[in-house]
Length: 320
Image (tube, rainbow, N blue to C red):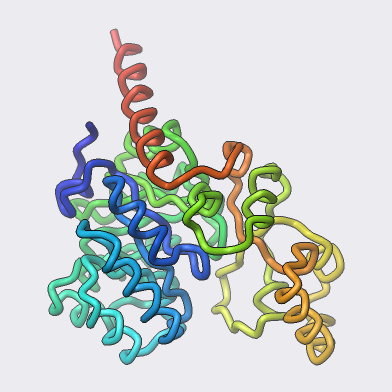
């Protein structure tokens, strides 16, 4: 068993946190990860109240273990924060934006504050906001993120915010990645894409199978999906997704896409209804090379943690 500041804070059996992937990390997946001994986070994304109520209710009903909710900071307001807190999650994770306006409110509700950051300035803001856990997210991660790589970012954040525990995110999909994160000074890992390819994850089965079949070089950071969907992400945050025909058509032609939105947005929404993955986005990180099947979340949590233990033991035996 691996014991860290993360496991002690939430009484977890494994130092694994489910990334709150919007539209993917629903209540069933969050509860499954929590029941397996990790920390499951519902992917609250842009803060849609109806979706949040449904998925938070599912998580709360399905687990007696610690669970939480993740939100995109710049996209939510105080009303969304208050809605989330009414469901009494054990943790709220804020990503992509200044967490200070909400930090005190979350902590006053008896909830742990987790902040995801992409650079050292954001890490210091998170600490100022009172973060109990800081997630250092490298650019290898699926979905939105920044430009720093996980390997150098994690120890830099660890040094900057000690004694606040840090989690590593980005490019972690197995026990080797978790062991490496711990060796870098992290107290655990936030894992997303590996859990997208799980039986409990929301989303189409075809999307999960596309992740299984993909390779890391087939992912890229792009703005085109945000543009066509109408999400005004702040400068510096780009989404990592699987390359498809829509990216081939519009990548590098973002200004032209903006001009073509009246037609392209309608076509995109029709493609969503049809499940056309040649047009619609599948967010995924570079660690897709390590994903070979769709499995249940409990199996993944146990295997990743046990493999990390074994890897750490092997590394210890290298020391003479």
